[in-house]
Image (cartoon, rainbow, N blue to C red; front, side, top):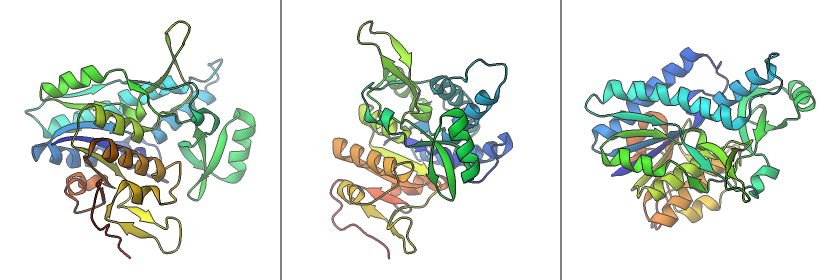
Length: 312
């Protein structure tokens, strides 16, 4: 099978953890073990990854740098995180797949200037803040901050991908039998000038899961895996009585009230891929990627799953 596996940013740097390199190295090591299992089981593999915590850290550092006349834009910071995380994933996968070439590709994604996401920021980046910290940052830097878990985080526009510019290169690498890491953080967001046809960066972070779904569709993938730091999609999320879904259809996922900045885009990406391709999608824990593909863990999404299994 051809598999596109999308790693959540929180799978590489979990909630409440310090953004130290050593912590991320440990999580990437764990990710490498799980991803290599997919290849060793005989599957073709394309890996995408989130970058919310990492791009947020770089944005903080850039905003605090007194030598800069203005902070670096998010599109350039996104490109930096693709290089950083992509390099770490390549090292880990090469160590475990000695007979395969593994390549990380800085990937650019075109987005639409009229995407409503530019007026409604939902993508969380950076750490959590206490309310008093958040208010100071909102005033000083003009940031939008929104509730995420027990704190507040910066929210930025997260437009949908329209086109993956490096798609032909990814196809060529796959045809050669290589493992490809690409479209990190959803890809570097670019806007096309209608007058000149030139591309320029957008102050946004593309939704990684929707890019992964589009990439999987255009690559004729058999499966899309969305791997994160939770075990399932949950009914009654945020209540005192959540219920994990083990099987679902796209309609089941869309009937749930899921957070826009976290699980909502993951469920929508899985639903879109299944509807458009007839393939299967899985949402589940990064440390058992093969189990998510096989349906032994996580939430497995099919177009016509006869009776969705919803654990109490």
